[in-house]
Length: 226
Image (cartoon, rainbow, N blue to C red; front, side):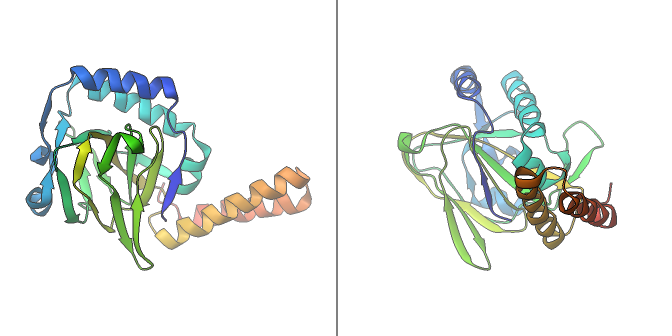
């Protein structure tokens, strides 16, 4: 599933993040990269234990929990604590595939990376280049979204970030372990969820809405790990 999700954060939340970024210490982004990714990764990021990263990570996770489109698409069981990166002066991230399992630093918690997410903090006209390019069976998708918007995509996709040739690209990136491991099953549930919402808008409480809701939950019960 390749899905843009608008307005995950409010304008005031984005402004708060930008304020924190100005005072933050940015370190080599390869600190959290796997062996292969480290070869291709040329950017900077906040330390995982940086107070700014922790504050903003909590803000993002809370916002995701109340975003109906994100919940419907991801069916999240675990969200890896968000990380934050910065690209400028030609920095880029070459083609790679995200690690299948990520361990939360300093804890025994492991997250299976079913889905990857990038949340933008820079407006598209503030920088040149920096497009996230995600490859799937239908081709390459280029992504450059407004600040506060998020892109959700399968973590097993080949993807890269093009060099930033002007300005600064600020973003958060993280992974989601879904209650439903199988991507095709998640897509069916997502489409069914949207159909149920349409029916409820037209005929709330109708026998058809009740029946479809029952089908949704029976499929979720069959496919969910949790």
